[in-house]
Image (tube, rainbow, N blue to C red):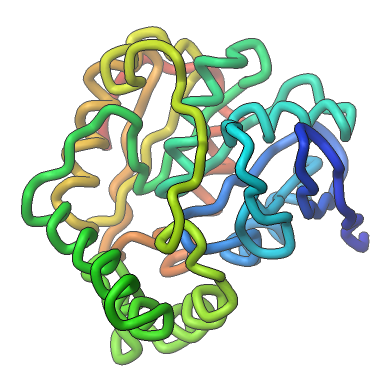
Length: 274
């Protein structure tokens, strides 16, 4: 079955999307500096079982750039789902995409059936000084030395596998990051934050069954976040994928796909850790 693709003019912007498969809806939300292509392995496999939607967030990939108006990625996603007649779905996000997915679960809880948060960031979490300093240095490089220098530095960031470790994943990431405008490094984007307590302080209010995934070799902050999610979300379980870093879905798609599909097909479970 071929994928359907198009542009949805919703919430004051234009979002590029692709849909493939039949059955229960499943939404894939990409990470920072990336776009829908990071989900290539999942899009093909998951569409054998679900109606899978992947899309480019505002300012990424083929979607429109931010226009100066305030917005939230959660509202953009809800409007996109309505545009495509999706009332509720399983929501899967990685890194920033996981942050958006958890934010979405607060703004639109009835629209979330099951939640998968992979190597996720978290609204309200305070980064350790070591990680925060490394990330801030990329902003400085972008301002002082330009976008191309910042792209090179970002691709060499500790969370990503190197070319020698996994040339296939490295090449795919490089292509996506090369295509990214770096607009979020260059300008202050007027995205609204959730007008409530940060999600990190309200995790107990997430009632959707949740699978928390983290790469064994991901940075310590992401393991701290994963443990926090497991402690606080009532129906959560954790999966550590061996030998991978931050891009667990791309570095070991076989394990990622198998475990996510098993979780989505299983009955709701109480908190546990693997």
